[in-house]
Structure formats: C-alpha cells, structure tokens
Image (cartoon, rainbow, N blue to C red; front, side):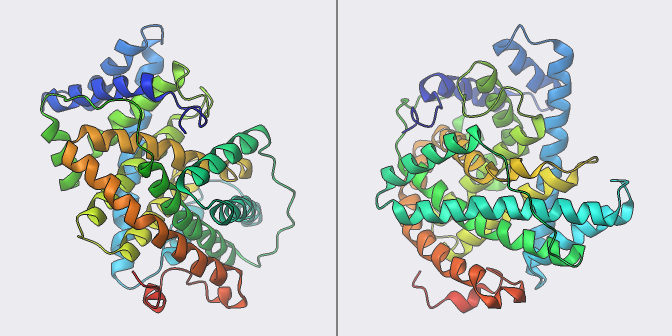
Length: 379
C-alpha cells in the first residue's frame, strides 16, 4: 500500500526513530529551535544553515498556533457553540484587523473558492468510500485519486453565490467538517494497514508515550514536522513536492499527531466513536483555518484545498502511525485495534452527515455539531 502511495516507509521509519530517540534524550534547557535545527542538519548537511533556521522558526510558530487554535475551538464548542461559528468568528476577526489589506468582496471570493474546491474533494472522497468494499481497496483507491489530483489540481471557475462573508464562512465550515469526518475513515484505514518496517526499541520510549498521553506533545509535533521535511528532501515522500511550505508540513504533522491521540483515547474506551469522529473533524477545521487564514498575508489558492484533505491525511496518518508504534508496543497495538472498530462506524456516520450536507436543511448550518440527533446510529 505504501509503495503505491509513494511513501518509502523502509527509509523514512529510521529517520523518525532517530528523531524520537533524540527527543527522549533532549536536555530540558536546550531551545527547541536549536535542537530541531541540529536534527535536520545531521540528516541534510547540504541544506544551508540559514534555510534550516528559517524552517525551524516557522515550524515552531505554526505548531504553537495550531495548538492554540485547537484549544480555542474545543473550548468554544464546550460552551455550546458550533465549529462553523468558531470558524466564522476567527475569519471575521482577521478581516476586522485589516491585516489582509483587501476588500471584503475579494475575501468573500476567496472563501467561496476554497469552499468550492473543498466540496469537489469531498464529493470524490465520498465516492471512494462507497466504491471500495475492503480496507486495502479503500486505501489503494485513495492513493490512485491522490496521484490524479496532484497531476491536475485546477479548480473550475466559480461565480460567487454567497451574499456575505458570514454565509460563505459557514459554507466553508460545513465542507471542512464533513472533510474531517471523511478523514476519520481514511485515518482508520491507514492505521489498519500494518507497516512493513520493523519496530525497533528506542531509549526512553516511555517519554514519547507519556507526552502523547498527557497532551504535552508540542515537541513531538515539531520533531515529526522535521522528519517529514527530511523525508521530502531525500525523496522518500514524492507524493508531496520538495517545495511544500513549512506551514503545510507542520499542519500535516500536527493533524497526524492529534488524530493519533484521538485514536488512542478511543482504543482505551475513554471516548465514544461519535466523540472520536467529532474530534477528528475539529483537527481538520483547525488545519483549514491555520493554513488559509491564521498567518498574515494572502490565503492559499483554492487548488491547494482541492487535494489537501486526502494528501495531508494520508501522509499525516502514516507518520502518526510510526510515532504511535515508537511510543510503545501497547500504545501502537491499541491504535491498530481501535482503528478496526472505528472504521465502519466512521463510514456510517459519513453517510448520515453527507445526506444532511446535500439536503435542503443544510441551511441550518449546524452539520455534525448537533451530534445528539445522530445517536440513532448504533455506536
């Protein structure tokens, strides 16, 4: 499977192993920027020091931003609000700050374009979930679609249909939420495919598992992003371009690690399948906001959003799975067992919410947030 996905597990796994060993032995007083730069320089001696430094600075900044936004979203939802409302408020705050220095109409067009591109990706992903009856078949179909998307990521022109930024942002939120639900299916499928590389014991592996379980995992996300960078530069992940921005690499790493933690909680029966799926949807919302709106400057092009959910999830899940196995055999095997239980439930929930997304009632703009109404689905 991973050969078809163009991810060289046999060569990238040792890099992750070395990085996580170093993380477990890292002195508390060593700045993460210096620590991460040394890791990358050791693997990529030909990479200019200034370029490494700039990459590490961006990774740390984006990781901290992702974690902050994810905490903010969870807190907002605990207060009874929806993910769509959170996304709209965050975008509106960015517009009000005038950091984009553009007219509201041009920003509205960007949101519409992003939403349209994401909807195209969701339609294709929904089609794949139905056309593939087995786990291997699903993952192989996703791999084939990734290659097609990467060869042609152009998005058809779209005439702006929303009346205002609020309506457009809520539409983007709906598509991002369902994308997160589809991502839950993909993540489960990827975790179920056993990795070919043999797991090796690392010193102080409990340090990695403890960080994942406690939530103090910013360092693990940074190190994972660094490992992805090394993999890209060495040609181990040709599914992504070597020129992939640091912010994109970091968000992929963050989503991979967060979804790994969610899967672990589900496998230990700490959360229900419904809660796991909802949490994974939140990581997707956080990623879309972070990549499209959180950083200063222009938003990313729509073509990027047309393949990000599939490509990012595929790469993030592979790296998340590797980190999970490094964190300890009990942790890793638990993830594998949990993914088997979650896969079909996520598939069923994807169908329920997809029907809602396509129905006239979607104007209520509360897709997948009033989750209690879907309790009729047996979880």
